[in-house]
Length: 300
Ligand SMILES: Cc1cc2nc3c(=O)[nH]c(=O)nc-3n(C[C@H](O)[C@H](O)[C@H](O)COP(=O)(O)O)c2cc1C
Image 1: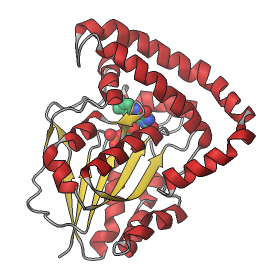
Image 2 (image 1 turned 180 degrees about the horizontal axis):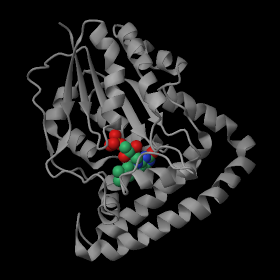
Image 3 (image 1 turned 120 degrees about the vertical axis):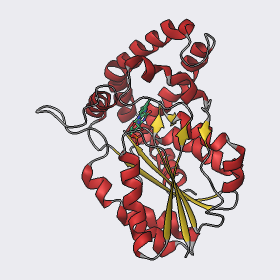
């Protein structure tokens, strides 16, 4: 029986739920789907404390992976496809994903394998996906598909709901706010991507264009504009914080608190101005945006 390997890291279960829906058509078509968790040796908390949440920032942004328990791979020597579901943390792959790709056994395993990545995030995934692409290319994987599922609500609304979820543990909406995360409808509908993967598994070069026909990626140039600026500034902050030590270090706590206040003020005060700049300069950006869509959504 042909196999599909599905690696996953998901704290809330959202990513795994997406993955199960994507994999459903494979099971229906007679493939054996083998799920493999990506497990950090020291787990990250969920729900998070505010302190732990921000303490994950410097390592996420600088790509300093944690140690992960490498799943056994001998039972899946030659899968027809490898799926990897992952979340973005601070505009970068989550720390356990850095650890996963930085592991030599994993990297060796991925060489020449056909890989499709599936991200479940809030709405800022572009730079994180870029980093993931770098990892896959360095391992010699045959990266053929990118699927992004995001929260469709307004940027600032999703900031509030995701914090309420990740730090407060409450996913359900209130009278004022919607449910947090990728919508139940989008998660359930993600099996549509699986049907395409099953159909195109023998013609990998067609996977991404076919996935795009069913909106595997919703590219929002305004959000990408804000994200790119944020990514650069996060780079400076993370280096500055890391000068005061590694995860959990007392000495870096003050800098992390400063970063937290910086982040909230940027999100709620500066990013609306950034968006205004984006809209005003939109006509000058159209060509570049079209090029980016080709690169990031069609993988050209
Ligand atoms: C520490 C942390 C930072 C996050 N940063 C981002 C981010 O930069 N962009 C984004 O779209 N989502 C971000 N998220 C949301 C996650 O990508 C994801 O949607 C959420 O954590 C649920 O994922 P799960 O499958 O691990 O449960 C962040 C989550 C955490 C825990």
